[in-house]
Image (cartoon, rainbow, N blue to C red):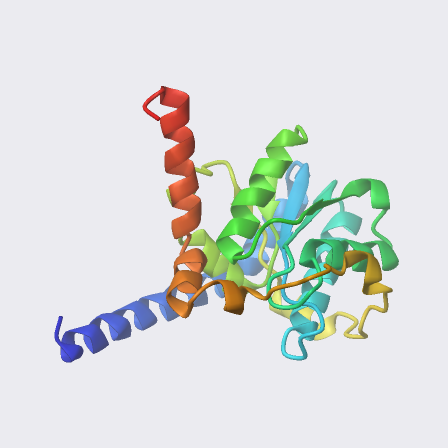
Length: 228
């Protein structure tokens, strides 16, 4: 493919992405109010980010506090924090669970998914865990950007009953931004090897776009149908 064609396709994708993301931001207050009025979610899935990464600290703080807000408002009954030890030697789901408990989410309502290495896997593995735990009404609770990215792919994974509760812009302005202090040692992995040393950039991008999840779904369907 010619370079000019690649640039054109990237430009089209960027314009489409920005337009759709803008729609999600505009609709976020409406989605939130509908969630508040409706039947509470059995569980929300909160994707992780690397711990002890200066560029991600605020994002993790926002997501954990958003989970607490949804729990306190009665919008969610339980929380699944999702994420393995990906770029730093700390299991993201466990770190966020410690933070959630520290700021007041009861431990008996917190669950951890600790295998996911990409945002699409946070959503998929979190969903599988939710179903295994017997939860039926399930939503992803994250910031608007990640909600947009995951909303693009969730139907490919056949998660047709999964919903989204993206973070309100007003919440991000008003929420307590104080770092949540925890002892992270129980979430630290020994002999850690970062994802950047285990996968190439191209492979990591495939994971971000959900290629590994799609492959897992295909293999599962083949085993169930007896073709593998």
